[in-house]
Image (cartoon, rainbow, N blue to C red; front, side, top):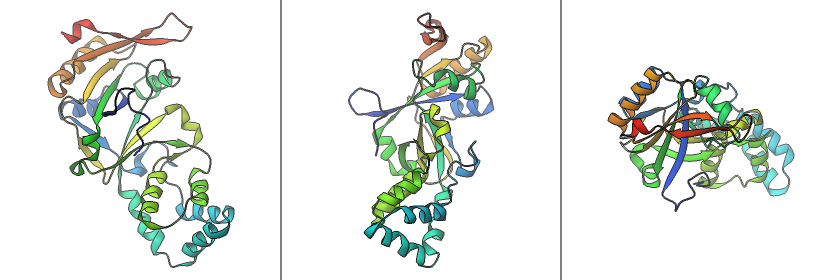
Length: 258
């Protein structure tokens, strides 16, 4: 399991951001302490998690050589069971996060695209490793998205296609292969074995940061819900950072933390 996106502190949690508009979905998430894991075909990019596996396999076979080429070709020449069995790949649930914080290059874009043009929020979650590995959560893995052209094809051409480890790695690669045009998102995904709500224990939501244009009434509502239902104690708000023309920074909202 990749852990390169954790905090710099001793390994104990996964530190992930989620940018959101303030709407009924956010209210539900806070009040019921849960996150939605979407079916792959509902993601905002119609190409995301919809790679034609057989076509990628054929391209990989044309690129591979030696034993790897023979193995790939053997699977192509067999009946369709292998690719039919891989249809279960479309039945998982995906919850997307970002590593984008204030000084991260993607932060301003994230605020505009996913947080209602700075009128929404950025949530910071700390997920303990024990939670991720708990079988009751049905979490398959937590993975960074890979932004490359032909990422699945190239991986298949160079990875030994045999054994259960290969199937698991193939599934992980399938759900994290994304068009390079989306690289600015610096996305990390929780991949769950089925779609639906993932219950989040109280205390995992560590901070709520409000956008530059979040209305006061929305700030007060979200802060109250996050504190009461999620146990969140830290609140901040984005403001301009005078160190550069377009810099932003999060400033603690002292009154909300009382």
